[in-house]
Image (cartoon, rainbow, N blue to C red):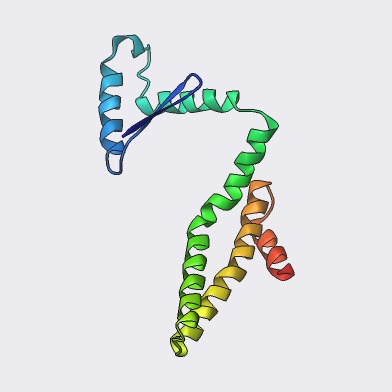
Length: 145
């Protein structure tokens, strides 16, 4: 568990498996609090969504918009980067240790396939972020690489 303060925002960091329990507890606490009772029952989820929208409206600089777009393109590809790196490392280690075999060729084929597919996925994600057709973007970047 950790705590992070960013300006007026206070962030609680929970370990794995504890977020759902904390969410349920805060939802119950929110429902019991008298000042949060309105003419219509506002759920904890609605309050969280409203708070997120309020925070998003404060983050409107061009740099933050650029970083949001950049992260929307590359964050979904992190597992692919990790897998390609692990396969390349395994192939390099086997080459250094003079380990040979057909399976090493398969590892190299999978690694090269992941690298080619990565370009296609970058094109797909980039065109989706900027409002285009993901298939067209993937095809274009796959064609050029």
